[in-house]
Length: 419
Image (cartoon, rainbow, N blue to C red):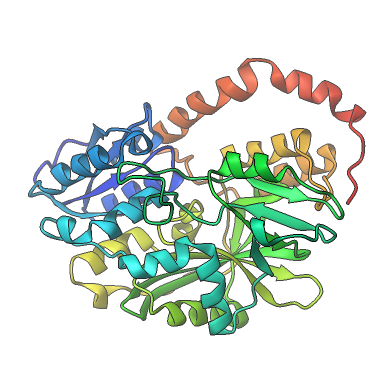
């Protein structure tokens, strides 16, 4: 932790084990901006960075959103804290809902609550995409589905479950439901069990066969783009999808068109990470979801020259005209923990929709890509602390208890997967 300059202005970054936080800390340090990493979790990797000025403890947001809000407000009242950078969905929700309270102390670049509700509710998001002419999968509430013949996906209707969207919750309640159920052709799921698991009536979407997953990100100022970026996801957290762990920057006019069209329809303000999949049959970019915060693959964005943490600081401090929007195309980067997660998914996960790749071929592909493009999210020789802290958290759960041996021993006995 750097304590040499305690007088400089700082950004407050509430976080868990999010990789984007470490990138924010390093990025802002290069510009002479200090950071306060705040978390309810122990041994947060970003707090182990030599560039982190201060680490503080927060209450758990999902055990009490109001005390969590009050703790953030107390930190925001400090004279050296100029802004708060959202990296988690509950933080975006909190900053938007209580923006007027935070605005008394810090400057934020977050969407107003009405905008946030349109993207946090995936039914409203689908309607916005259709109005913008952006392709979306057919989407219905689980309660409206009576035909289980097609291949389908079931996922949460809301990015964050709060009293803003569910009547049985109060202002202290917040939860994030990330699970996705893959439903094979003609398979009837456990509807009541899924409702109980997700705590609400989720959505059902048609399964779209794709030939690639893509990301379009932007920082907008009341409908005007300040900076945008694109990448193609080569590998995700799982072979079935998820956040990008190996990605390469691109510049595709068609992706730019659908990305801007959606944000224009929303008259967007703040950060936006939009995930698209390319329909293998039509070649169209089809909307997956939008996350109004810093994204998991932010390190790859900064590696390519699009310094969104610095852009956010400039926008928050009234210097948006200093943003130099541009980046290098063809830059590939890896999240090493994520590559491990991808490998584990090949060993342990099943989906009726996506064929599982061969383990030996997967090992060769990961190894070759790391040699070919040795750029990493956490791992920096001049700042090893975050990588070491992350490894200490991840490895005991996945390696030290011997599960690797068991998984590898039974890999050859697995039945092939079918649609």
